[in-house]
Each structure stands twice: as C-alpha cells, then as structure tokens.
Amino acid sequence: MSAPTADRKATGVFSPGRAQISKRTLRTDNWLKSPIITDLGFAAFIIYATVRAFMQDHYYVAEYHYLTPFYSPCVSTGCLPEASHFGQFLPDVWWLPYAAMSLPFLLLFRLTCYYYRGAYYRTVWQAPTACAVAEPHAKYTGETRFPLVIQNTHRYFFYIAAIISVINTYDAIIAFHSPSGFGFGLGNVILVTNVILLWTYTISCHSCRHVAGGRLKHFSKHPVRYWMWTQISRLNVRHKQYAWITLGTLMLTDFYVMAVSAGWFSDLRFIG
Image (tube, rainbow, N blue to C red; front, side, top):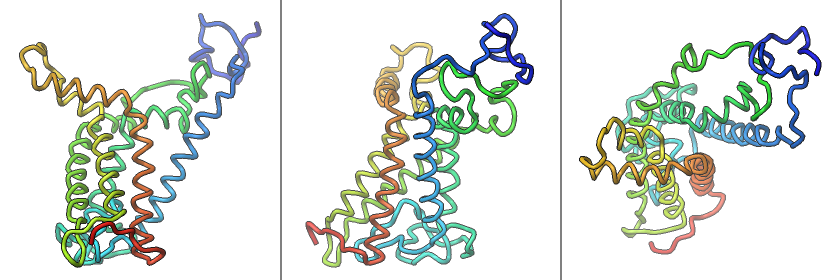
C-alpha cells in the first residue's frame, strides 16, 4: 500500500506504526448521511429558536395563561405583566431576550451534554466525522483547553436546568385556567407533554445519574440512592432520543402558543 501523501501530518491513522493507507477511509457505506442529517437538525432548531427569542412577541395567551417555554421566566420590563410570574428586572432592549435569565443556561446545558458534544464533535469539528474515518486535525488535546474545557461545567448547568424545569412545570400548572375558572384545552396537553419530556431529558442526564449514585462505595448501604441510580440509568440509555425529542417538542409548544396568541387559530378547548 502507498505511503501517506506529503501534505498529511503523521498523526492518527497516518502515524508511524499504523497501516499505511492513503485513502481517507475504506468504508463503502454512505457514512456522510448521519452527520449531515444531524447538522440539518441542529441548524433547524438554532434558526427557529434564535428568531423566536428575538421576536419578543406572541409568546403569551392571556386568556388561558399559556406561556411558551422560550420566554420562561419572562423577567424583562417589556414582558406582559401577566406573563411575568417572577418579577421584571431586566432592561427592555432589542438585543436582550425576554427570557435572558434562562436561555443562556439551557443552551450551555445542552451544549455540554454528553450526547450533544459527541454529536457536534463529529459533525462540526469532525473529530472524527464517522467511525473508521480519519479526522483532519493534526493533534487532539481533548477537553483540557479553552473552549472545550468548559465541558467540565456540565454538572453545574444541570442544577440550573433542573430549576428551570421546575419553573416550566409551574407555568404548565397555572395554564389550567379559563375565564370561568378551571380550563383544559389542547394547549394544556402540549404544555404538560413538553414539561414531562423536558424532565425526562433532564433526569436522564449523566450528571443526574452521578448525583444519585456517584461516589458510593457500597450500594447496599444506600438502598434509596441505589434505587434512584437504577431508575435514572434506565432512562439514561435513551438520553439521545430524549435530547432530539425535546428539541421537537420545544418548537411545537412554542409554535402552538405563538399561533394562538397571534390569532392564526383558536385553542381547542375541552373544558372552560
């Protein structure tokens, strides 16, 4: 087999002692399909979420107390008073989202998530793009330098994400309201479903699993924590699926609230 071309550095699969294969990969399957689909999915969510975060309109249905999770908690002085469940203390300027107290932390929670980093390491940084495909980088420093060293803060963003999930739960509960008292509509189904899935994604996080059972030398001496660790471990197996599902439910929930608020269609009411 031919030696690696001169423009390739002797690292990774091209390092001394490894098989001298000049081709990038010997794979014959469509290995680019998965990273391309992942990139398109990420791009769709990022574009939608960015546009909605800076629209600063059609985020609340006052009649039924529907508040989109993209604007919760709404703490800007520009927020509708009825939508500001935790006060108004941020300035109302165009470059600052109404939910600026939560969106950055939720973004960092997802960016540092073990699944998400594995996904964008492959698709964005190509480290590597796919199994058995040589990566273009000359060296690998792992998560020891900026900016990847920030990945080690994931556990702290998990705590903040859990608090925000409590706030989203509160929003979903008070949405059971109608002009005549208790009310129940399609919006409630969507809000509650979204909250349940957000909790599932948050609880199935690797950091949550570690909080429940990490650093225990004897599970037999901690039966409650062992039970919690076992249940979280079962959810953790599907953490990837929950990560993608919640991106979809977040957009669906926001779109529904926006559509009802803008008057595109009325909320389908079952009670009240």
